[in-house]
Amino acid sequence: MSQRPAQNSPARNETADSADPAAPSDTTDTTDTTDTADTADTAVYTHGHHESVLRSHTWRTAANSAAYLLSSLRPGMRVLDIGCGPGTITADLAALVPGGHVVGVDRAPDVLDLARATAAERGVDNVEFAVGDVHALAYPDGSFDVVHAHQVLQHVGDPVRALREMRRVCAPGGVVAARDSDYAAMTWHPGSPGLDDWLDLYRRVARANGGEPDAGRTLKSWALAAGFTDVTAGADTWCYSTPEERAWWAGLWADRTVASSYADRAVEGGHADAERLRAIAGAWREWGRAPDGWFAVLHGEILCRG
Image (spheres, rainbow, N blue to C red):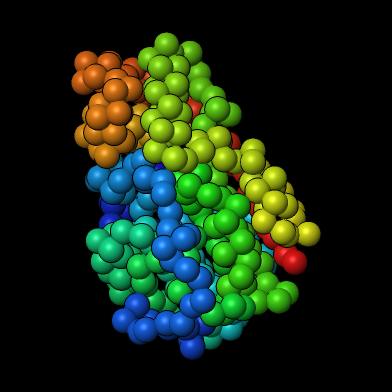
């Protein structure tokens, strides 16, 4: 399934899910029995929110990033979108549950301003955004019909605990959905020692930050460990092969490698120096110029009930 970044607007939006008209707003005090001191995430988000990161996040839509979930959505549903980022997926989900309500939560307050701007620009009024941590969600049990997380579990310190918390706030008969990439399963042509170095470096930095970059293959296992008894697991891909797709994908990774929080953490953690990062960025740009270039990103997906 080839996605075409050239068709999307510049970095300004992204989304995930939201919930119920009665769900608390981002300014409302909420009741939760979870001990946040015990459940707060210990992992560090590897990418941060540099422009090169948002360039990718704002391209994401419900169609290209949550297609496996769409047949489960119905009008009037209450949806929670965890790790919503700039809100592009979230706003899409809100449009797909007319008469319902969507809540998008993210740990980074600044990116929620982008999410609110996305919703306002689209005229979506059944969505709200709040700061939140998947390990300690500030909502009562059974608050949402759908709880969704896109590219979140790979970045958290305890994905099983996160899934248990997602299960807690999901209503009986509802759906918990998660999708994560699997870095070790990413593949490309032509071969590039520089991209091999990128993959090795990224996986080491992500694990040093407390995450699991190969999360896609582990989602089903995590869901079963979290207590789900009905788990439908699948996979899907993003594929970049046209000149426009290659330039976009290579450009954002080249920039991310030298200018984002990921670059800072690679250097500060002793995983790479600036010269090595520049070499990897150059390898990305070289790959992007290859007329026969092709890159596939594999994602694991789970729909959980019970």
